[in-house]
Length: 114
Image (cartoon, rainbow, N blue to C red; front, side, top):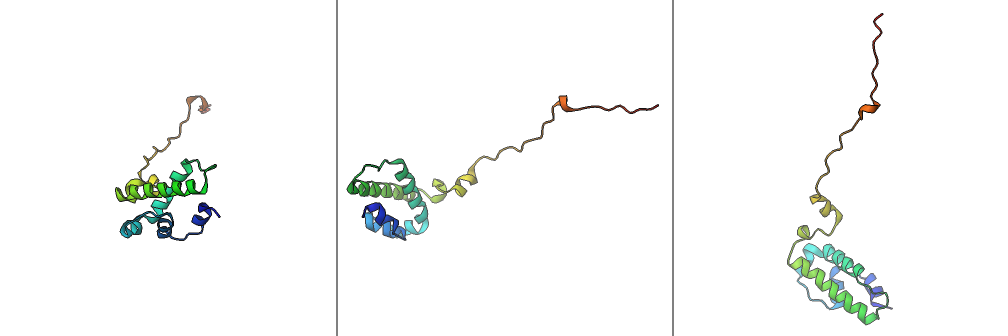
């Protein structure tokens, strides 16, 4: 069984910190638990763990969890905007598209006054 298999079985953020041996402040975890784990996942996706040994994978997970945790110690979930709903909240709104009718498609009819 690999460390990644072990991590898949965990059910709380605190368990991730305990298994990987990363110190944490429970107050930070209460506010940003899902954000921290999501950020850790982002960092892990950018890491190439394909040929890594179990020990190297565990070290990478520990490093990325600690880095993600640090992001939220120094900042808030609102400032970090990990989740799409938070990113969309500050995305510039697109201008509504005004329908365009080219002159070439306009036809005129003449009234027959005879």
